[in-house]
Image 1 (cartoon, rainbow, N blue to C red):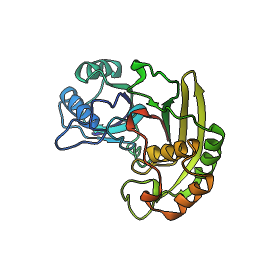
Image 2 (tube, helix red, strand yellow; image 1 turned 90 degrees about the vertical axis):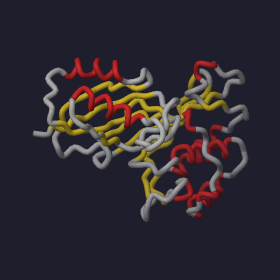
Image 3 (cartoon, one colour; image 1 turned 90 degrees about the horizontal axis):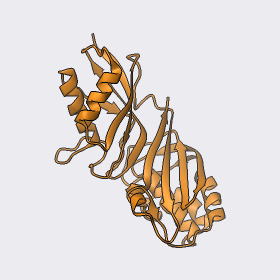
Length: 245
């Protein structure tokens, strides 16, 4: 009898091609599947809550898999997985769930954090995880732009490629949390299109730098054209923090 298991996964996305399995490069999904296949002695396929791009990190990625092999001691399996996986990938929790649980389709909310370093000199140890912005930013204007981007909209202008007929998503909040060396853009929504978070942060920074106005933000949404929006920020500042079911 097959049993379904839910995993929470953390990873540093720097050396990988992204979450999703790729034919000619190393993905996070592929490495976890290989490790589980070795330990459970049967082919294992995992389903994630969504894909993260090359260079994007995660603290709270969620995935599920089915297996007919009994898992008698989960802590032991977690230690064995850690031994087989690269140090940049760790399965944090593993639990048996009902067969109706689905990591992707059951997700109600996702939270992403984008880390921005604004001090003149960036710490080299934070370089892989924070985007260094040299230009002074108007945080008040950025907060106003964040309110315009929040809510339910057609986010075609913030999607790098068509995801289908429905590009409507709901952003529940976009907050700014100050740090000692910059700030974190916290974005929570019911789902995200391809590169949507990075495109949204790119627009917020363009407002903060005075390159576009608050009126432009509304115009960009209404145009439903990716070419109307500013460039995306780099992937390495982005982390998938949490998936809520």
